[in-house]
Length: 300
Image (cartoon, rainbow, N blue to C red; front, side, top):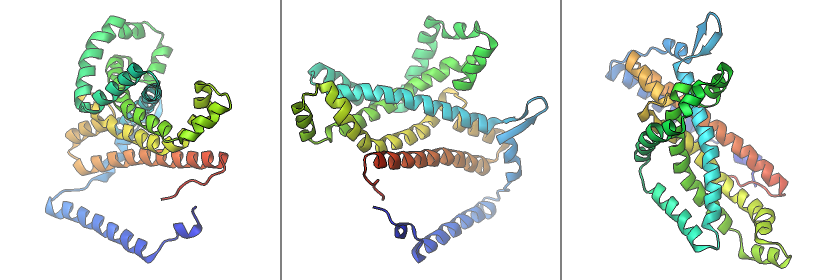
């Protein structure tokens, strides 16, 4: 249980904070003096937003990449969560071949480097599946409003195939880890819970829905939050297939301006904003769930 004393600053906290500030100041000094690097932060804001005479302030390169990263992370997490839930249930199934299939998926995906998966899906989905399904042609035939909606929620129509291949890779890769989180959450529930609900006449589906899953959800929530944050960070790898997310835009901007440190510090700050926002949201969700079940969330 947390108390106000848990959050009180101590002299040690102050000392550590001052030490970190001093270290950061020394690092900036060494970059300036040792590398003869001329800091130029004044140009960074214009790469975040630019003024358009017809539309007003609009996102520029870095914010465009930032929003693409959000789209990839949100859709990737939702798809991975769907895959993880289905495969997680299959991992605890009573049927041997169902468990075997889910286990093979987990072991196969977790033991292949994500960079290899990216290229496999890029050259297979983008160059084979999408043309066969006629996705690009279908989108191009849609009204302007539909194309704008696709561009807002997913990607511009000309980049949709590449975006979907990157999304499939992220979803399958993260889904393998979510599968294990779901499996471990379900299997962590005491056997007595199953026996008691069975004695009350519940079917296995009713046991899972009304007894096991509510308890497993509280256990699985923190690692699921960590996996969502991991998805945000892992999305950077799709820059190798020219998805214009935050890391890709950072590399393009650095190559054009040679503002190495300013660009990457800004990119780091944008990633940090995303991950911290997710952490705070999940913390609030944990508090809400704990209050709903009459328990107190654990504090580290």
